Length: 138
Ligand code: HEM
Image (cartoon, rainbow, N blue to C red; front, side):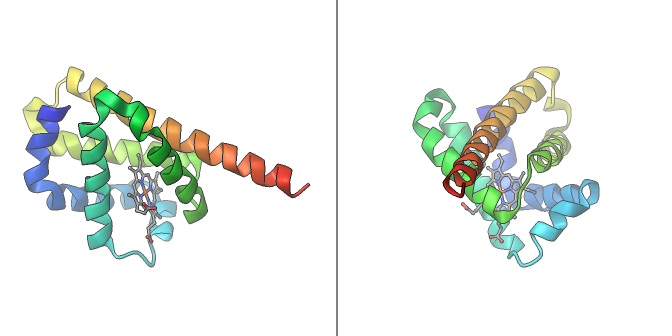
């Protein structure tokens, strides 16, 4: 993953543009969520986070609280569980475009598991905080 990420980094802005175009094509509900967003800034944040995660894969447990916070904030942005599926699909598609022949089944498997892990941590934290809000209100 690190090797392939290094290849994407120099073209990060272009890749991020591809990613959002693809996401909005396959998921119109995602476009709504970014209606008021500065996408240039957002592209930077997305790649910064992915770089942090790829760099931290060997000590992911240190990153878990940060990823959980990110998941809770996403629930507040209106992001649903299903959005993580379309975002994951758009991300893998973008990497495939960027990497061409280096997009092997092994590379795909590694990215797919890492994204799923990240998304699962974010979704679980969002679900827990939603559950505790319900409890607090009853
Ligand atoms: C692993 C997956 C994801 C990562 C690493 C990620 C990363 C980020 C980061 C770093 C921010 C900046 C704001 C903050 O830190 O609170 C952000 C904001 C946001 N993300 Fe994500 N995100 C992910 C998944 C998603 C998904 C599935 C959606 C739904 C389509 C989404 C929609 C948004 C929206 C709407 C914002 C707020 C934009 C604004 O400021 O107007 N993200 N994301």
